Image (cartoon, rainbow, N blue to C red; front, top):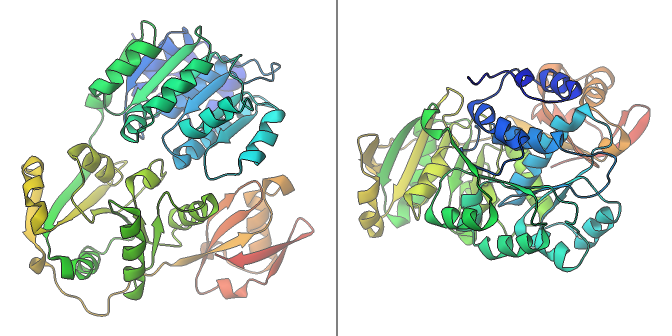
Length: 453
């Protein structure tokens, strides 16, 4: 009989204490089903969607096997996008707090290759990254997998969708044959089945998706004409009044154009796609997550790995290429018991695609049923303050909050989310008081430059 208590697993006492301290009071279903096999050194195929707790499942597994004194790459986690890799690395670092000196590196495109080479010279215990950049380091011999004992493929179905199968297979050639391999996927298409046969040995199969509570989402499809499509989108926002939303476009060019069009109509919107530099993507993600921007216009690839807990609405500006893509997109709203709204706009040329979408859950409407509300605008309550200092300067959230309240005189209510990174901090501050911030701020008796994002 399975139990949901972490204490039932053979884990170090320090790890159990840390899990309790960081809020992991009991195992999710995917953790309870998969961790015993992971800790028993068995290969695993786990079918579980985002938000099920899968990162902690493989994270606890790989950390429990880690030899901290052995400063070599012992675990590798492959992810489809930079955003997901960053998210996974953050969670692993939180899980690793039970032990000092555990080094976790992220290796993704969009960051200086030479900088990553320099970091790898000092070695690490765990690497999280995207297949293309990992393979480049392997081919350049700046990364060695000689001591690898665990390989994890996270969101394997998305990596195959994005054409990473060849890179994944090439990475495998650098990995030891004797290793443990874990494959996590929200769906299990034939390509995943074929891949699993070549990279896993007698894997245990786990599926918990069918028992998870489905998101409560109201799904609407609106017929539109191309010339009024942007105006219809504004009417969607003015009628439903979401506090935040993601609008999905099928191309990068469309993302940029739509974001500009919405800005011209007093809708604060930021684009997010793969042609942007990494620092630009980070800035956009921070602003959306801390509510300094209410609307994100994104491609599917760029939005993978977004960690947004409570999103009001998802909009498909075009009919998605597949029902699977549709399901992935709208699954970002209506989480954790909240109600979500999904809107899909379709033009006449897309009518032939609609047959596979029609069921009792979806409503198909004319855009003329939306009220035309004039002078509507969608503005953020916060702006983001950037502080040119971070973890490298030993800054913590409490230090920043204290400087803003005690020294500058802001109220706690006017300060939103605080994100602390290695060299910068991002602070959401209400529009009406951010003008009180000077160009420099003193924190822990040291002056730091500031600017508004």
